[in-house]
Every structure is written in structure tokens, then in C-alpha cells.
Picture 1 (tube, rainbow, N blue to C red):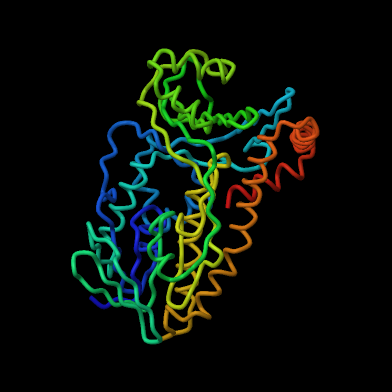
Picture 2 (cartoon, rainbow, N blue to C red):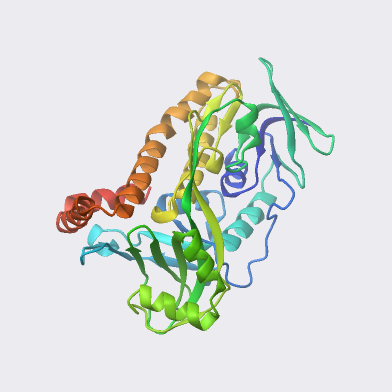
Length: 385
């Protein structure tokens, strides 16, 4: 098969880019186990806080309008709690916007993406395949797949996750370190209405978040130590509910478990480059963040947005794998990704530190931000992109 763009990896970034790369022939290489057209019936414990900017991007791809309204929940306020009674509140109304983000379940969003992709022209999906070898030269790239198929492309996009084979074979170095934490996720029914408010508690290392879901449910993301995550997973449903109620100060009253808890290891990964000759990285292949800011999926979708825009704006007849063209994409993304990575990792370290000076600094920072509207609005606008 000979195509303009071969996208390796069928997660959010890969499928969104395949849908967005209009006017190009695209092959989407979906590894075995990829969630092709997943069912979206029961609640999914894994959710995303999608920014308004990315919601508009997905709407332009014909994806957002495929989401059932009853499975999408607006976030209209966010309350963040530190220690020593410090707190920070973001409010959409005061910022002059209708919502800060939208909470969407992973399975629901993936299903809508695959429905939209099925209607796209020029896209071929190679299911249950795996990249074995990548060869790049001045004329193009050749991908050898595990099943024996060979694919030729002018541009290869590595959207194949943190263990990216594309990144490795392109020789792109990474900063990669595991956090000593796991994220425990589960959904709960609430006694009290969440009123479209997202909550987050920094707990001296662990970070607990409750995000609003439809039908007065919430999604929990509790980033905590390996030992504590194991204890949470071992609790009986009623015990887990009481534990989360206590940790959240019963802000939503009594909780009832709606989905079994699951846990994911946490890491920080940053590719030193996002492009190489005939290769571009997107999503987790390029960057993985701590979930305390909920921006991992958004960065991946922003990668797809920017790369699709660069390809669409290229001069007529220009090779989509041209390195100088790809560097436009890298330059456009480097600042935003770098700032987000440094900010999230810095917050993790600051709120984990036990020294009194660090406690004073983080509480002063929260209180200062709360009382300076200009700073709050700047943070809101940045987080809504």
C-alpha cells in the first residue's frame, strides 16, 4: 500500500488526525487490542476533561455532534483545595464563558471518533497490525508490519503511545521517569447534586479529583502511592465509598459505587524532539503528564489539530514529509507542551514536598491566585484552548 500519511496508533490523537487530514491518503495502523468502534453502553471509569477548543475541533470533524447529549457533562466551576485551608475556585460565569470543559467517557468519545472515521474519504484502517521496522530515506518511508504487509508513506506519524515504536526507530530520545504513584479511577452516584462543579484536593502528595458526570454521578481520579492504591482496590464497595466520602469532606454526601475501581501507573515522558526526517510524533508518543491537570488527552488532540493545520496549509505539491514543513509543527507545539509539562511536574513536586517553606509557598500561591482575577482568567483561558 502506498499512501501520503501512515499513522501508527489508533488512540484519540491518531484517529482524530486520520479524520482531520483531508485531501491526503491515510493509512491508520491499529494495533491488536485497539478499541475499534467500542461499545458505549455502561459508564466508563476512564474519562477526559475536553477543553472548549478541542470540542470545537472535534465538532469540525463531525465527531462532537455524534456524542449523545446525555453522556456529556459541562464543567461550569472548579474548586481546588490545598492544605492549611487554602482554596481556589474557577467559575465559568465570572470568566465570561459558558463552560470550562466537558467531561466525556473514553468509550463514548472513541465510539464517536470511529463513527466519524468510517465516513471519511481516503482513510484505510489496518486493524490488528503492529509496526516491526521503519526505514526512512529521501524518497519516503517504508513500514514493515508484523503480518508481513509493507506500507509506503511520505510521512509517518507516531501516535502509538508512551512505548512508541515509531519514536524508538526514528531515534528520538526521551525524558522518561515513573512517578511513585498510580491513578485509581471509579465512578460514583452522589447523594447531593454536583451542580456541574469539579473538585480537586491536594493531599501532600496524593491528589483526589471528583469530576461531574451525567445523572448526578461523578468520576473519581485518585493519584496516590502504590501502597494506598492497592489498599483502595482491595476495599469492599461500601468501604471504598466511605473512604472517598471522608477524603472529600462529604462534599457530595453519601456515594454509591457505579463502576469497579481500576488503577493505572503514572509517568512523565517528554520527547526531546517531536519530528525527525519524514516522522512526526503526537499524543503520548511525544508527551505524558501527571493527571493532576487533566490535560493529557487535550495535548494529544491539540497535536492532531496543529499537525493537520500545517499539512493543510502547505504549498501545493509540497511533500508532507518534508522536514522543514514538519518543523513548523514542532515549533508550534514546543512552547505549549513544554509549559504544560513544567507546570504539571512543578505542581506535583510542590504539593508533595513536606518542608514548611513549601507549604507556605503553595498556600500563598493558591490564595494569591484566588484574589487576583487577572491571573485566574489567564489560567482559565490557557486551560480552555
